[in-house]
Image (cartoon, rainbow, N blue to C red; front, side, top):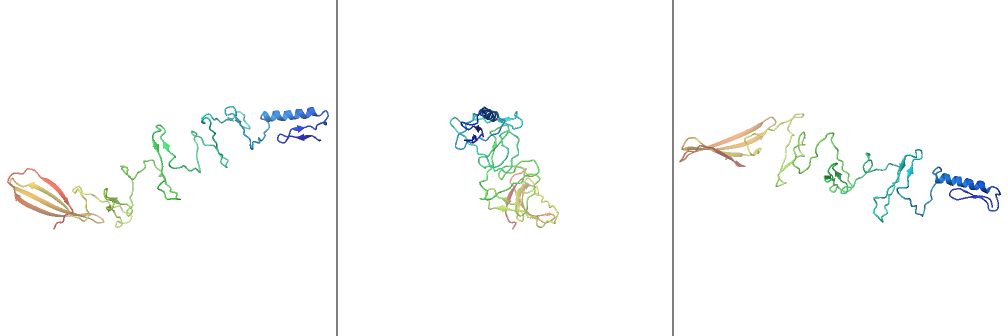
Length: 272
């Protein structure tokens, strides 16, 4: 029988009863091959199919093929006792993502409800996104402006500046009855022109096209008391505000002197 070789490491197996005076050379060659493999000089493939390969973490290292001073190792210290953790590698060549390294992520989906944004100083300050109200199989895109500012919320008390509201799609709803809706229209304004509506500082309630009645009394003399009723109706045109007044004065005698005046409002009356 001629010489043969081992299946995995290709070591020489001298023929039994043959190779006279050649066995020593074969053994030396095999030992050199084993020394190179075990010493890390020669790369080999470990066939562990159907077998358990137990490697002790902390004493097993991965060294760079060119620079042996570049070393990586795994640690199993944080795994619970009696627990086996499985890390599934994706079918892609890429870089591992770590907790604290500065890295740019791409092609990632974060699950709403389990993903949080925590303050860098106080970890109890937590923000979270919720996608529950989005229609099924729909992706919504939120475009961030090229500015630093504060997010505007639907029901938060906030002061807005530098905003333009689109007439025709912007409504003012009553705080109690949402079916009561007000709306402005800019349709009659000249193109490329900004119109300004000034609210007068005389009425507690601005009602366009409706009568607002203001009543007050005032002493003319020690025995004569005057009672004024002023009706006001406001109209707005393209260029100005029209205010229509209807004044009713009632005089009557008082049994004693009055030295002060007062006023009050009555809304939605008619001057008739």
